[in-house]
Amino acid sequence: MTTQQRLFPSPQEVLTSDDWYTPRWIFDKLDLRFDLDVAAPPGGVSWIPAENYLTMEQDGLSTEWIGRVWMNPPYSNPKPWVNKFLEHKNGIALLPTSKGAWHQTLWESKADWVALPPMRFESPTKGLAKGTIPTRCWLVGIGYKEQLSRFGKVR
Image 1 (tube, helix red, strand yellow):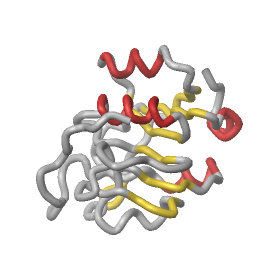
Image 2: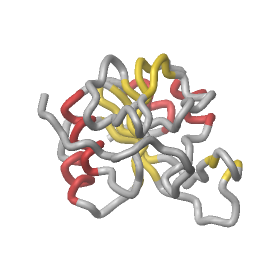
Image 3: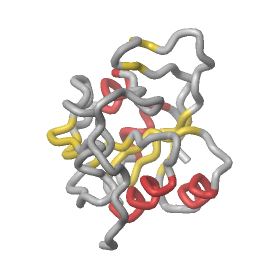
């Protein structure tokens, strides 16, 4: 494992533009428990079925990941998260549609993909996003093709 530079210099004390949470229905449909949520807010998210979570303070990019991971990374900079996800090789990620190089790297990997319908995310302070354009996302899995197929055709 490579040593990576710490992502955040200090603990998260206020919400940021990256604090939008995966809708509950995704976890209901996956019907999986995760060992680790690698990019969680302080206190975790109550409806994400993960035994443990890493916050900004624990720095999911420099902390070792264990077991089956759930990853909904900060969309402001998903590249380092995608790289670590591919190295870990065990989990499911929710990622935005993108033309970035990280997206191409992931597309060319052995990961399974399924497109999700446009959706709105949840905010801890605002509830379900309203008045915004629904986001187009992918669920990407390494080792979970059967679970991804519950959402549609898997690539």
